[in-house]
Length: 393
Image 1 (cartoon, rainbow, N blue to C red):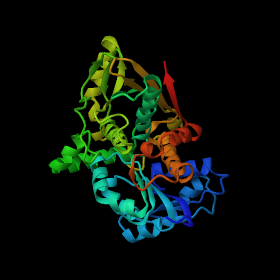
Image 2: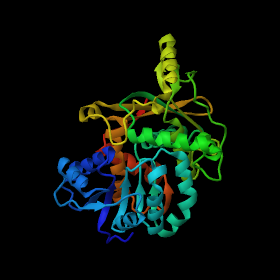
Image 3: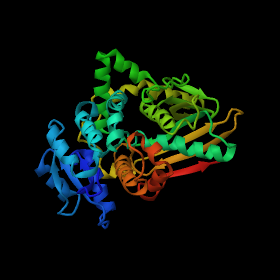
């Protein structure tokens, strides 16, 4: 878009639970930043006014009415901005027109999507248009999959320093996590599973580790679908429910960066439960309860934890890069809020600002945030969004 656009960022879906948190973060973090021009968008101007007042945003923050079911309203919205941050999911149901419009018009796009088959469909449909128009399209700008994608990048940078080269094996391990996934994440998961149940091609994409690397398929990847004892870490592991999203984005990052991790790169994610009989029992208990996302006790879209619960949440991720001779380097990624809401809302906002201010020359296309912004995004997340990236002994 031309730099004369009326707005830098429009938060679309600002009346939803997560969208409101994104707007609140911008209102608080960038209150004194007069150079940042942003607006709120959603289906109801009355609800937008309520959100604006409730989060303490300036009374002159513009409000824009736009509806996923009204393509003309979406085009009118994105015609006013350099970028749009959308929290309106499931994207499989509500994202098609917005991605198409952004790709065609040259407007940058950021979402919280973890719907791998839909992301692949958007890549196939709109990559060429985005490259022609100048748009930078970025999926998965929240807990799925920014900390994981950047964790793999960060530990590989350390591997280059210590070993002189990246490694073809990286393990991503969730050490601790307090918080919940969002109602929108649960709805997205259900939408994908329901669609895949009716479409064998979608089901194949759900299962494919290289679903987001069109034209490239790497080596067989660890299944990571049942409890296992990790000999390298001397601990029991259990399946991590977001692994099938994050691992696909990590492999896409490797491809977008020109395969710095190698074409034979192997990556998996699992959750650490501890050693001994207690660790094994916990691994099996979590695995048995892994169908919770499909159950009825998850938050509904628009619902979520209290401010206190969000602020008491956190996550601690371990990354291990293993050289062919068995040597290891380790790094951690930690977040200071519950992952699905508090940290996610900060991350997507900072992704948009990072592209706008720190790396404005990223080429057009459909990117992962980590591949597009690399060290600059890490720095911004550390400086503003409560994340830490550390090398471990």
